[in-house]
Image (cartoon, rainbow, N blue to C red; front, side, top):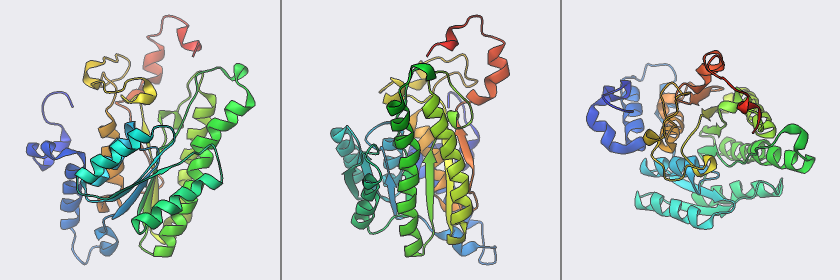
Length: 309
């Protein structure tokens, strides 16, 4: 964050030099260290993930998540759709951090067969402790101008794909008997609409409810399921590749800037730590306060430009 030390610095300002993964796991270890064997569910609190699959990890948020896991010693399965070089670059970053990385192409427009990639990666990794559903797509056109094929494709990739990947991963987790984590990357549009993004908003809202249903159904297997809902993040999807978010003013966002992919990765990494073992069915919003601005922002609008995508 800009200037000074925020609450995260409770573990010491020097921790900021550890990177996302080191800081998150240091906090988790201190939380777990404060427990005793008499603490309820202590043994469930102790496990750390060994393997993770992150879909759509060739760039942006997915890459940041994969690298965060790699930095924590977690072996990572990486998937890509169109950017093979990007996926290989992510894999190299993970390997440079000392973890293993396996790469597969995943085309969520080819369902249900494409979801078998989750099983392929689980076999290569020796299991799957964490699944992060990050692959997605979107649109920028009004409902009345959208054809059905476009509508269905976005729903297929963003919702059906996450459903099938979660199903494959959860079956593996249950068979292994060690519990697990499923973390769905949704969006602020899990909670609020946007003009020109009907199928994206519908898919993300649906994924948010799927998260809750899975949380109920999988809890008996010690599998937690949560969503992370980013706001505007400086990534290729928002047309901001390699931009410093602190140099991009956003007056309509309370924190005044877009987010960084590593800030979303920090939230995902936390949900995969032992410290988050009692969190399930939640949506963790990472948006700089954007969703708080509804009534406030509407009073500041002076034109109708927002009605056009």
